[in-house]
Length: 257
Ligand code: F6R
Image 1 (spheres, rainbow, N blue to C red):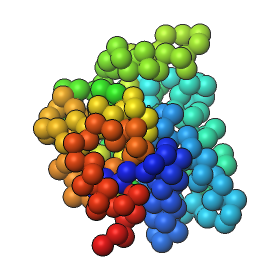
Image 2 (cartoon, helix red, strand yellow):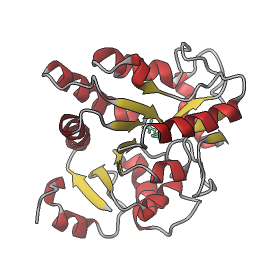
Image 3 (spheres, helix red, strand yellow):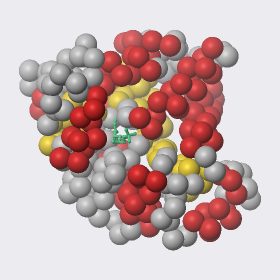
């Protein structure tokens, strides 16, 4: 696991956008795994800016981690809408190449199986972007999720629902979500997890240095051969070995050696 620690959130976000941009420019037909949430907004804003500087996503395929059960793709708080608003509508990715689970599928279980198959049919995910919940979730794999799980429906914890509640003004935050499983995420060839702010410090410490445990689903990334964790100084604050990570990658530099 590479742990890159940047002084500011802006520098960490910029670095993640650069990782994605470099993947897209060196392999135009790459398959990206995408996350939603507040952490990713500046990353997507930077990718939109890079598009206007010439970066093309025309051959990229994307698969999002998750979607709320019961929300149609047109619902303003759906992750379909989020992705259109913050990324897809501003870059040249083809709509037919953008995949998210259908939250309003008549048969959600069949939808989960079909989503997993679709990822496989595209040759798997090359680069998976991840945020982290305060409780250590990745995607919507809440604590106690099986480390061997594939795409399925998960019940959201009260704390996740509370974190999502401000976005739902005229209805309760959904209780269920379709999410890629932890095994699905670990199957990606590369994972990049971004965490910024002190609110994530404890979850980050458990994920990076805690025991491998379903109680902190992000700790499963310790099993992944090619994961980069990108942090700002506040999110790194509870890492016991942060000085060491800083020595290996001074100021987040990847080619330090
Ligand atoms: C959403 C997702 C979640 C978020 C996590 C952090 O697609 O995968 O795991 O990454 O809940 O959300 P923010 O960034 O809003 O703190």
